[in-house]
Length: 413
Image 1: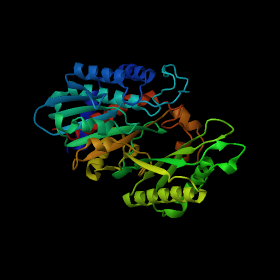
Image 2: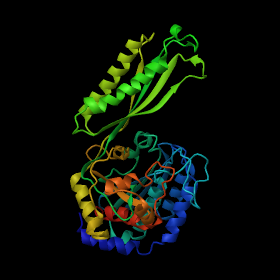
Image 3: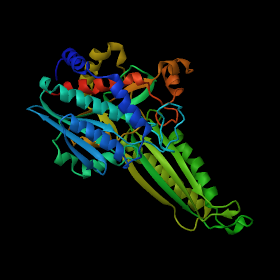
Image 4: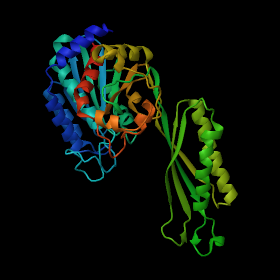
């Protein structure tokens, strides 16, 4: 680990020549052309072209649409920098002049910023390769939103086809007044599981409900009863979120359907709590179906999505110190663990430390206009990730490159 002050100075030197207008052009082009998970062909091609022009050995199609660029620069550590590339099925409502041109698809989570930061950092570090030694691996990851992108890249040999990392580094745009760089040592993001439930009933005519076993009513009782799991079966000290995101049943006003389907999402920060909540979900679903006299047991399918993201405390502390030197001591703060989830950690082989931090991005005018007496209330009242109004301030383009550059330099020889 180099001295934070020296890393900050070197970062400023090698990023001094970056043109904000060029970063903005690259970013706004990505924002205009969002692509959903595993369809990031245009985005991947643009990133790959930038990396090749900067001297990286580039491999495309890793994990279907992923990109890996390798720059070997003498003896030293191997540092992986990761940015995710996919957009969301959201209809943009920002009114920006560079708004999405894809109907129903938007970079509502800021992955266009992540790719821009990644490309900018890769270019700056390549141009300054005389100031460091080691191997830099740049990873453009597909399908973070779908939950399968990191695992797809690993299954496609990311850990064996390319230099094994000594550290894996990444960052995420987040709401909050632009100009801050939150760091959390240890647990920083939650695990996420999806649960699919099928309730089997007996369908029939809406005029004769007595001849049916209505799965809609049973599923409605399940939805209501599930609300008690967190409030009555989990200790207040534990952070848990259980959401019913979808409820599908029926085809017509006067037909009682033969089945109802629910889609649930569970966020937890403790493995034993996760097991307890999943057990409660099964118990409630099965109990309500028995009470209703359903003709067949319900189907409950758990689909593990994301693991907990647990930053290496030492690594996070060292990179946070560099960011304080670079941006000022008051710009780095600890929000604590978030209920959001990421598959970033899957890119780190077992035993390899990783660090994942945030870059706040809310435009000052939007922040000032938002109601709220404290930080949490203000953040809750500005457009956040996955909102159709999410529009990061363009002032974060260059700082987001510098956060990655400085983090990499803190480890490279």
